[in-house]
Image (cartoon, rainbow, N blue to C red; front, side):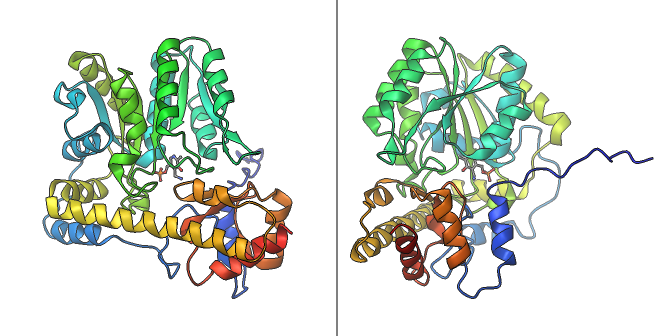
Length: 399
Ligand code: PMP
């Protein structure tokens, strides 16, 4: 008996498929600007020095016991300080329900399940465009999805007016997914003043804001600055939710370490909410992995290691910002008729280049340059060795 004869192959993931195609290409010139992972100027993956040092301290001392269901208490505590501030009243008053999560993805997924379980009649408003996995996450949690305007292809910037219209026109008490900083895939973030207006309007409409913060520190180079949107909402008294990830800002991609937090009305509510988050995690994976959580808590509780980390995050962000400026300058020097101002206005790991799917196909077929068909370039994949080749290819396909 063939149990699985009706199983068709799943659709390829639009992002992971690019890496597969890159690996299969035998050209010596090939370039991968599809992958959303940091690379150094030699195109190599990076393990931060602070992480290496934390691992040295762990070695020999680590037992392999289970963490509690909610994960490492110390890691979660330090992680909340990053998002909500060292001196956050909410933390002091124990009003934040928080659990360690399987990186940012796991945090989003546990939240989506929580939303489904305790606000079953709500939907989630998702920006257009967004990280494609957001759609999968809320789909599998069976939360109906709506979209809101975000990116304006005309200006290659924020479509603020349409965004605000959508916020105003959504039914009162709607759930919105917001990227806290370094929006993926567009690299377009609201300004501080725009965040204030968004927060104000959310208050008027009694909307719930769920912040996905996968790139804290990666946008400006300073985690405090990158938490601005969250701090604005907190100052306005919003009870937000937040997904945090150490994949990018600590380079802990494969360690799967992150945090889900939900701001509550009081400590009692926070205790109840946390217990329910754990209840959701229990049948899925029981408890989260220990190694990455130890690395994070060692780094963040040692002042020297923490300041080394801050330097290293800034180093990564600065290299990316430098590559943006250099790529733009090269295109302008080549006499490109297109404005590349958006390349330096956008921030974070990605540049939403404006290349059309057909132009991306030419990049790949003629130049062996791999990227997603939406025109997203991972600036982390750009380096002094491939930037001329990349600039030339972009210039050729946009002539
Ligand atoms: N949210 C966004 C917007 C992202 O870009 C990513 C990483 N691509 C994630 C969440 C989750 O990443 P991870 O699960 O590796 O932390």
